[in-house]
Length: 465
Image 1 (spheres, rainbow, N blue to C red):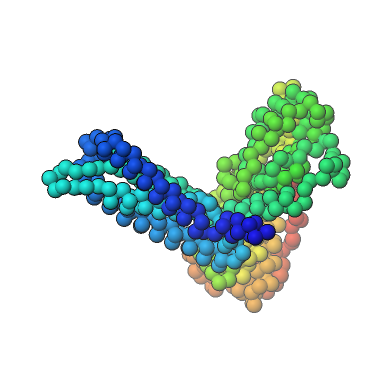
Image 2: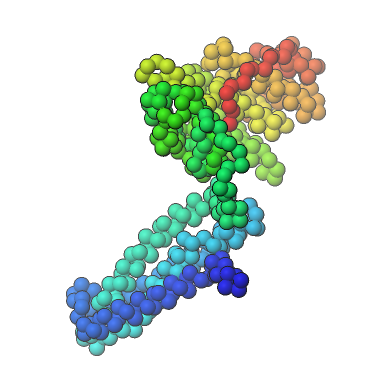
């Protein structure tokens, strides 16, 4: 029990690996110096490594630079620990301190420092440019220095990826799965019979890429239909259903199916259009949350959402059904519909920003513009969003005048279209009615007002992410 506890403490400590690297660096230095002494310091000609004075300067520079690199890595590690404690959970700190790449980087820099310091002691300079230069040890210092530069670049890349929320979550999840495997071994016989028509996933992850052609070709060969259960951006657990098969699943090559689906820790913009909208919505929603309350940033995010929806709204959207060479259906994949994209782009921002006139006016302007470019069958969901926004603004603002002003479209939020609003409302009958009856919605000359008939909700799509 005590030996197990000691091994656990050493494995979770930040100092153990660097200390081992220091001992290894010292051993390498003594070993290379012994080789140089055995060859009377002529194993490597001095013309290749330099004269004693130059070697002394180089080794001193290497030692000083390694101290700087060690300090940099240690500082970055402490900053990462502080960020993790403040933004995620204090419990995640232990996992970060056990990060082996960080420990190895620190250890390599210290080992290179120790090697350079021990090697420079072996250099002798008689004053006339001659003396003894341990060539093997010096070349080894050069190699360690080059390796340290490579490791520094790799470490910066690693720490940047390790700071992602998905990476920290995956770190804890992976360690917990290993603990489960040790604590609760898999039973010899499954507790329930698996569905033969379901193909389970071999590992967990988010679907980031789908090779449609390979899946269609394999389904055509096996004469069956594949129904991919998680769409792009969907998460599948280990052993969770990945495909449902209509036909004989025994004829399928499961390796081909798994290779055609790429699973990663988090979503990406390689193929997932909805993830781009998701990121913009997150930015807008975060800017509207306390204590930030930055509606200007939200308006900038809405600008990009408006532009993206304008492009999508004028183009055909694939229904996720793929046929093979025979013309028969072979693959069904969950896909985003136009309605799903609109809900993804506007629902959360509308709920979070209905109380900000700048945000609500920008949303109205976006909806008004989208109505002018999308086909008639795609306009229903935009009308539904306009009605919901009008109701939300009416319930948030104190007076009808403020509610009417907040739901008057403005591409800037509150810009040139806000000028003269006080004078126009008395001359615009529809707007005046909106002020008198703020809880009803109607279309006005500038796109959307407050009074009129409610629109029926649009039909939902397949899966909105």
